[in-house]
Length: 339
Image 1: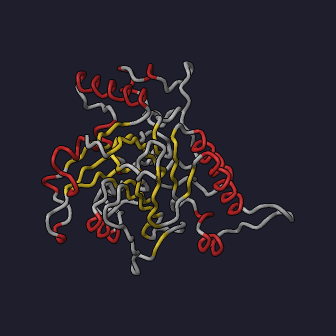
Image 2: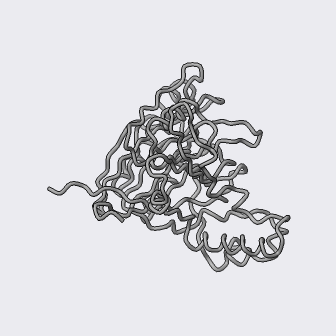
Image 3: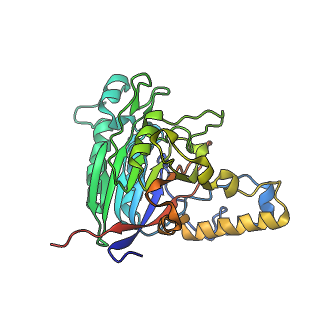
């Protein structure tokens, strides 16, 4: 490792929709004992989102903090973030968090105080967000943000909650007008709510729901990590190698899927050996609280600045059950300047 770099651990999750990590208790029916051969005949249980969350230097939440933008959902999510064992917690909104989108909320929400002096949902949400700053939770507006971390490193991050219009939700742009994602060069992490077009964005209807304007911006900036959620069923990790020419986009032949849902769950078609191997993997993921990726090692393999690690970190599955696991990424970051 370069002596001028500092190893930093980042936990990444998205789309918790007001749910808290499931406690680990001896009586919990979703304990490791469920992951036995009998797993072949039970439903997929909420496995991945477990308490406590992994310890980290930074935790990133890529939006959809709520399901229906209710005050109690904001309270649940931000209390979870305040308790999370990370030195710094970075958060953006998602399309379900309409109470934080002033233009949308003013136009569509029937949210007036029932009695004089009562707070609206939007005001409650912003108060909850402000109070969470006491425990190092930072809600990020769209743009570039720099953070001097407690471990001595500097993290440079771009954030945006905006996704293509689809239904009546917050933080959506008109697809005919597009959206300008102003991602600068030499960014460490781009955190957006939605995916880029064609990368971990495939819906259950086999449509690509990602944003072409975001893909273009990422292609120019080539961040080390792009993390997002939004499309629950497209959860996974993809290491993309960019083509040498701007018009080439992603070099699919030189890129690879690190993990997706087909890799994650045991299935009936597995033979006994394959099934047992997947069960052991899930037990390890549960114990560690997420899936580890050593980005430093991946970058040292030769891809360097010509690659981006794409992470769809949606915790909820299509049925809004917290079945999918967060990502745990180790990355080398530059030291902050002394003095």
